[in-house]
Amino acid sequence: MESDPDIYVAIERNISRSGQHLFLIFADGEAPAFVYTIGNALRGLPELLLIGNFPPRVAGGIVNDLGQRMREAGRPLEGDIDVGGHFPVRVRSASAKARQAYTLQAGRYFRHEEYDVLQILLCDPKGVYPGEPGCEPGYDIPLA
Image (cartoon, rainbow, N blue to C red; front, side):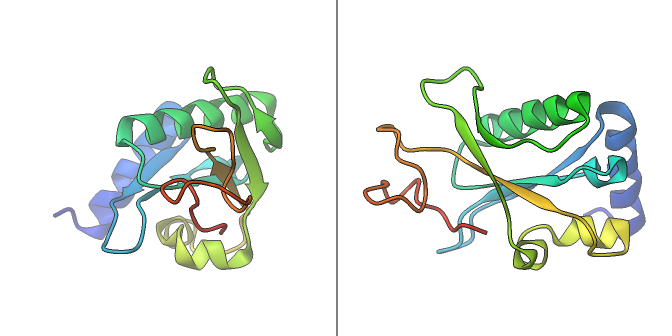
């Protein structure tokens, strides 16, 4: 396992190369998997968070694409965003508690908790988003 300094070197390398680093946390019992970014806050933008037991390549691909779009636009993402699927992804502001619950390594890397987090929501196959009535259980993830 990498030591903390090695992790920070990898984070810095990825931020330098692509603008952000991804942390993927696998599901643990009842808790779903999630992926989040580190690096966007260095440009005054929010970090991104996607919660759900989605294939890592899908989740990582979506988060990388949205992070790049946000950095190119120079402003936070908002609303529903077309990512080429049948339904758009939805972006919402996450609560301050999301930083502690989901983006712990971002705070450690920045050495502060003064950054915003946007949560990315994927809808179920019928187009119902998390938190809406009738959302399929596998898609009805916690709203952070």
